[in-house]
Image (cartoon, rainbow, N blue to C red; front, side, top):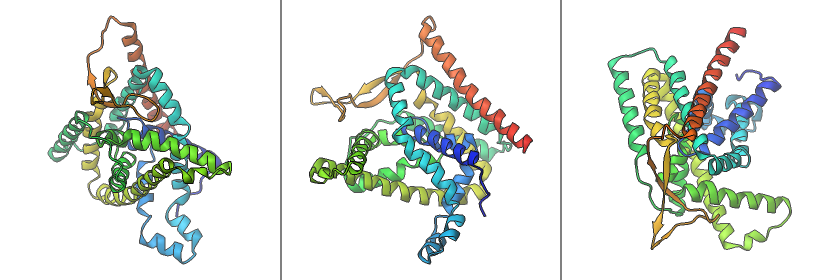
Amino acid sequence: MPKERTSSDKFFLFVKGLAMGGANKVPGVSGGTVAFVIGFYEELIYSLQKVNGKAFKLLLNGRFKSFFQYTNAQFLLLIFGGSIFSYFSVSLLLDYLIRNYELYVWSTFFGMIIGSIYYISKQFNNWSFKNIIGIVVGISLGVAISFMSPAKENDNLWFVFFCGIIGVSGMTLPGLSGSFILILLGNYVLLLVDSVNMLYKTIIDVFSGNFDFLQDPVRVRYLKIVASFGAGSAFGLVVTSQILGYVLKRWHQLVTALIIGFISGSLGIVWPWKREIYKFENGKYLLDSAGQKVVENYKRYLPDVSDLQTWTAIVFILLGIGVLLWIDYYGRKSKKDA
């Protein structure tokens, strides 16, 4: 039976959901890594595992209290409530910061990922040959994904459903950035920028009693895309959590080794010193619905050590590492006081 939570516990779970949701929207950053580092990853996976046939049977039989307890629904509602809320709050702030202070934002994330590698490695204590191979495989996969070229945008609803399955993997697989995978699939702008903006407008219209959008074919198209993406995400969450729960229970150290390697290999995605390479077709730059150039990939370069900006960015990297060290200290202190 899920443990009783205080009001303070519930508030901090919602805040953790905000952090995970905000991270999921930033290319290169994994919400699963945030969950792993903040300390609710395994509870997330095992709670999602409970969304199964038995849970639906309880629901259909009207045993709502049993369903609520069996699925650890309070935990899931707080985490995913925070994640969804972040798409209209924290992620908007992140979008603003990335547009105006891109180098420093990426530097902070780079530091946080270095800190998370340290944090996760502390829990790893089996340096067998098999696990070392797992780390090497994880690094190789992370590096390979970092340098893949993105595909073109595709709004076919079945492909959007597939994007939902893949995109949500960032919540359940530490180190794998769901938003970066969506860039590789060509649908990041369509699904996490344009569709979210259209959904936001639609929610405002509904609450103001204006249903004229139902006559707008463009708005209806985006709503169908959001519905397909949401359905794929829900399906992906349930399926991947079942697989991960099984794998974690039987090969915990090997999975941790793969995660350490994968996060290390994906550092290239969040390397702070990079320039955008924009999509260019038919002699002109491709623009999104907001009139911004669509990023195709990044060209990475070494920083200029004589530039003050470089040293400011290094301070932000240290700040990111410091945040993770503080989380580690706070976690150990909380266990000691408990």
